[in-house]
Amino acid sequence: MDILFQDWINLILRWAHLITGIAWIGSSFYFVWLDLSLRKRSGMDEGVYGEAWMVHGGGFYHVNKWMVAPKSMPPELHWFKYEAYFTWLTGFALLVTMYYWSAESYLINPNVMPLGKWDAILIGLASLFAGWVIYDIICKSVIGKSTGKLAVALFILIMAASYLFTHVFSGRGAFIHVGAMIGTIMAANVFRIIIPNQKKVVASLMAGEKPDPALGLQAKQRSTHNNYLTLPVLLMMISNHYSMLFSHDQSWLIVGLILIIGGLVRHFFNTRNAGGSGKAIAWQLPSAAVGMAILAMFASYDPDAAKLADQEIITGDHALAIVQTRCTACHSANPTDEGFDEAPMGVMFDDIAQVKANAQRVLAQSVIGRAMPLGNMTEMTDEERVQLGQWIRAGMPE
Image (cartoon, rainbow, N blue to C red; front, side):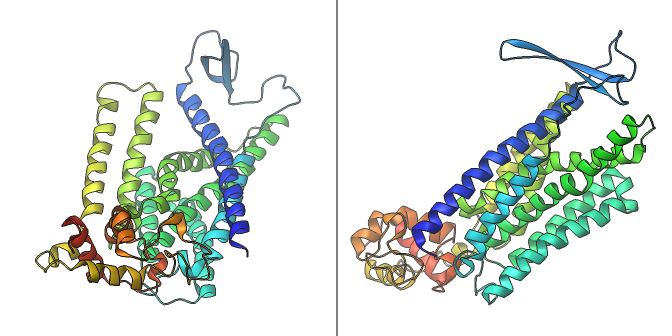
């Protein structure tokens, strides 16, 4: 595929993914807020569970939630489902065009596991399907009857998947697959549980029958899961821009911290929207802030740097030799890597002046983040990364 054409496909899909994702998250957050904000008041019509008054855009809105079919209904009944479907479809298309099409660069790291391209792709696809199947089985098991036990089980499931991903794929590929697996679970919840159950409930109500209460409870359970998973999965999906998240040797633990922090933030808003105040909402955000501090410190710790801190600082010629051996396949006026017609972002390392001019990029991407070289295709060693970091921090001596 022509590189420029691939870039345009990537841009279009990314924009579409962003548009549909905003629509899905917006409607999801709105309905969770609405459900938690409903209040019972005197004078409500029979069958109304609760009502909410809102003001927006210069007008007032009065919303009622009916637990049984009202006496009359308009011909239009709006369903909120295509936002979820198209968010998943565009996200999967992005996964294919970026991580599967260029698996050698973005998905595979020979130092982690020497996979063939199709082996890596099949593992990735199978993991998305397996994640949903295992999740669905857990929810429908006896564990699913207990909110606390179910939350712990789902946390363990995601952590186990994260551990396996980080021992199979590159750091970047592992994190994106954690996000893709969670996103698949969320979209499948809508497609396989929430919408079908809602359709059955609507059909029963319109027929004048009493709907099975288990259908509503099951849909509510999956909707709640989606609500609490949204913030963590958003960070997972943009993690490829932040190498300090995915490059850590124990990055699967970072996934756990992200799940906890995102869940705490979401719980704060849910509790507050339900009318909670005082002690009920006082602990969530401070706890999330502490979690974020722990995440930053953990992700920034480099044990290899501590081991080699007392080594002699290398010379400029040695630094240039490392960079030209490991980086100029892409970052050169004449790249030899087939995936690039020109140096990415115009960054080149053909001489020591160019290395020094881009030293902070090297420090961020290759030393601290370890995101470069892509897939570590040139097999840069940990010792070389530490040596470059010490040289840059020492002022890049000759």
